[in-house]
Image (cartoon, rainbow, N blue to C red):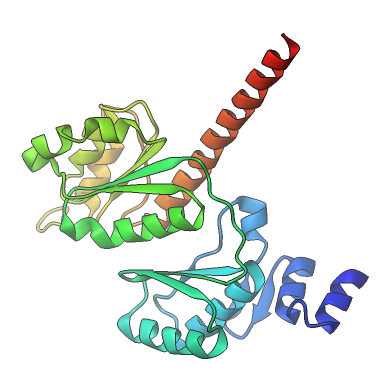
Length: 265
């Protein structure tokens, strides 16, 4: 603890970062931020901007940046994005901003995360599924995975998907984002031998057009896949990140075991 206090006194770390290391969370006016989640869970606490004021989003983003080296924000409005970018220019001018639609990943200049030797394929049925896929993609990017994005390959024209089968099979995990009846996830899962995560999207119209038909279709899939909630891009990205890391760990362990056997022989 003394070393931590000395680091604060020397200006090497902020009081917020010190609080996060001691308590596991940081208390701000906007709430308690779980600064220890990346170390404990392997994925960060995302800041859901929907329903929060501009000032709350700004405060939480800066807290996340100071305590974990990055901030992942989802469901941002245009007003929140504009205000946050201005706030970051003033308070964290060296930070890097990666924005995909309503999702934003902010990383500090000193961010030292390593890449993970695993690839996630993110597949969308149509253009309307893009924003949910964006959310999943930035979670995977934050986790250090390589992302291969495959768009607009819905089952209404199956040749678009069949042309990309080898590309899909090269990935370590697949996220399939689809609305309407959600059939794309079932088809992809029947073509690959990697884990598939289905994300139903609230697109379509009429009965079940709010994503319920896609959710029901994926839950009743005759091929094996996992399914997250409607529009839950963050959850899908987090699960894919954990799977990708597990795959990389197994590959690393196998390589080390092989090298040890070669040395013994």
